[in-house]
Length: 604
Image (cartoon, rainbow, N blue to C red; front, side, top):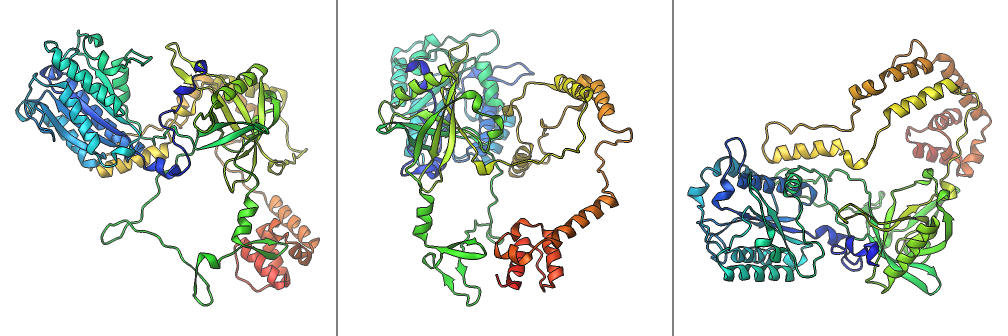
């Protein structure tokens, strides 16, 4: 099944849902250490450009700023090697731990900014340079930092990013070269990834085969080429103010094709609304975080009720029907969690207006049922060949109601470098029930567009059509929120300029379709039309609405409607008219309170 590339998607980060669950994923964090070469050649630069060492410091600072927003629980450290001064727990020479492996904070970022601005010129005096370093000892220092870090065993990933412009640091020592290779192997065995950021000064080249290839690529690695350093550096220097979402399975459930034939799949969430972080209440005096404690009590006696004293009720026909807790649980359970195949339909049967919530993604899970990948692959291939979609009953978990879903097949896509762009699998699309469809009554007397107006509208659409991708547009509300938080934390006088990409480009629109839009406006709107001006309601319309409400009230049997529990279908205006007509003494303004007052008046 290698041609379908199942091993490439979210493999390392998946966790079993049983036991720890989603809360454990939220608490899990990643570790990253920047290992920066402090040799003299890293400080060579022209008068106008920053040296390579300054560029590394900017990357560290930008990564910290991004991590605070995207995944604040991650830990970051910074280590220099090739310095005259040494400072590390193992007393290795020429290795200086500048920042320990800790969560990024405002003070660490401010320290880096100050060092970047003032410390570069004083680096030789404060730290010095010494080419007699051992890369093995620098890697060993990083490995010890991971081992001593709090919660090291629970880290999702551990990475060392090595920045250097020297492609052969131990050219004259075979022993030190072998030590570095052995230490790189130890890192790999301990689950620590080593990533090389090979830097280049102008008119210089970097040959990975001289020294670093055995350190970076193991014998079983498929890829043995490094990415373009310029692109990688640009990516690291880019500010991204967004949350980082791990590729972990939301749940793992069985997929039942027939009785006695099933396989296991992982369900992934591809799209989810990203809200602003919730506010935390603090004590006004100590500035300490507060905890909420909710209690339920009887309004008459003030007696505090325990969970076993509570019941749940449903109002039906004006009467409250009480349920025990086990009865409520029984009502919610329909079947065991899983996907149950109901049949197949052509892909054309799936309509766009069936959308009720964001789709999820299915991927085979070999851990629960061996052979799941084989059966999943066979089903996916046949669905793609015959252009059909499976229809299933979907029960996500215990106490979840069943839903009908369709599985939209998706083939694997790779780019010109054979790197997977789109994973193979099924998009799990939720289908509406019959109760979810709304019947729209179209007014036959409403004005209809003429053929000329329709053709002009098509011309407008054609002029303004462009390629759209949601991933290209950041939420301006979130971006503004994070900029304000960052400015307060880093004591900034001014905010970074926010470019709102959701605003229309009026100049471009006018340039491309200005003439056509004016022609369309002249065809559709009256001569005295003013864009943006609200139409005033006429006296005749207001009188007609009032007469219609009075007519509805005359034909209404209020007592019968209250007994049948249908008062909720009436508007607040009609309910208030009933209050006046029946002379019911109440000051209620909310709809539910008005209904209760009417029910009490008629003894319902």
